[in-house]
Length: 315
Image 1: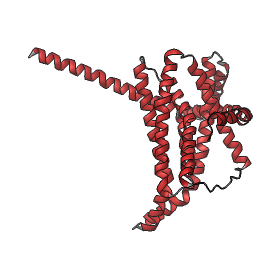
Image 2: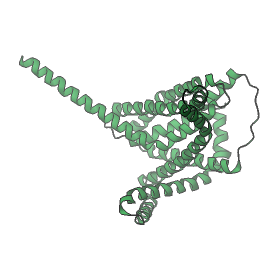
Image 3: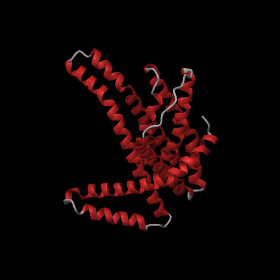
Image 4: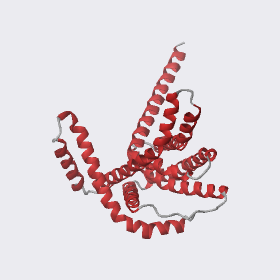
């Protein structure tokens, strides 16, 4: 009897350790995902454009194919590459993180310039719908690879796990959770107008029909707001990554000045709001730095990096 009790006690101890490990994994995955918030918003803002021009019944299948490609990018390519870096060249992670931050700054600045200069006219294509869908999906998956690389690098830098397998589990949870969150949101966004039309046409209550019409009327504005929020988040996160990367490399003066300026700005407002004001001031200065850096990088990106990328990965 005592042996059975000892066995049950051991099982309970193992269960407690396992539960603690699961809690730790979930906690670290949540923290790592939060660190990548800017890239998440960008991903959700970019993807809906890839289903524009297709019939309503093809929208969700296209989103599903892009989501599967995103999972493959993260789990098959980026996760092993990230673990290899963590094991053999951890000193490269801050540098890669800064490169990802610089890309976020570049993309945010490019979107702002594009908005002020107006969209370029696009040639109308009479391509076969199946071929056009395939080209759109592959293009979206390639774009997702860049965004996923940013997300996974940011997540890897935020993980504080002692062993390689724990890092792998946390990264896998981040990869699956982020993909489900982003592409679930994208699916809701691209089908919102169809839901609104159905509610407006077939709703039994007047309130339901009004709500449906409001959804249809509000979606263009919502997508515009989402685009601008994503752009602001890219500049903020990109600038913040650059500042923290410089601090890790020993260049701490800029980060210290921004902190001091944010604290000084926060003292202008009443005490209960000072913490929020300090965060807003810090994020604003990070975003301004990201915009300035991005504007400097736009000529390099558009004239050198983008042509090279299209040569390496055409299509």
